[in-house]
Length: 183
Image 1 (tube, rainbow, N blue to C red):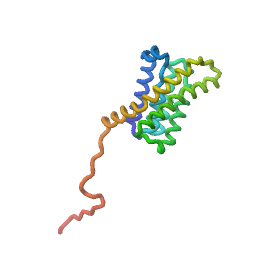
Image 2 (cartoon, helix red, strand yellow):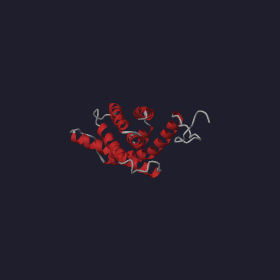
Image 3 (tube, rainbow, N blue to C red):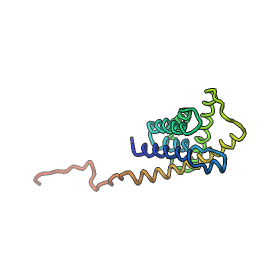
Image 4 (cartoon, rainbow, N blue to C red):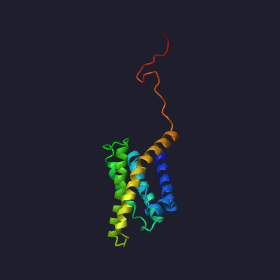
């Protein structure tokens, strides 16, 4: 397991949740509180292991819920389900294709609020739902789709900059026999 990528993903999730709670420009402009954790979950599930996906779902969900009006822990299950589904079929997904990243980001950005709303309705909470919720859902989905290729580019560059490069091949074959001694 590569702990560097896990630490980078969790630190980015913490920073993203903090910025979502403090920066209000998009919220005032469009009337939408964006959530970038589903798009980050797409990156984590395609590039890291299931442990990182679980840590991101638990930590990111709890951080997000602690700074929002959601009940604590309601975002953990939707994030984990998105990450687990993508992790399960990641061998079939073209990770390097920008179109595939956009589609997965759109699906994750649309699915996370729907799963959370379903859990809120089953928990007998009274979420504020109206026609404006469709606008918010659409903007959240499109922002999630737009940010997913961004995560792939940023983390690939960070991993390349912070990881060591393996040594190149030597000119000697590994199965070559070396005879030592007198000739």
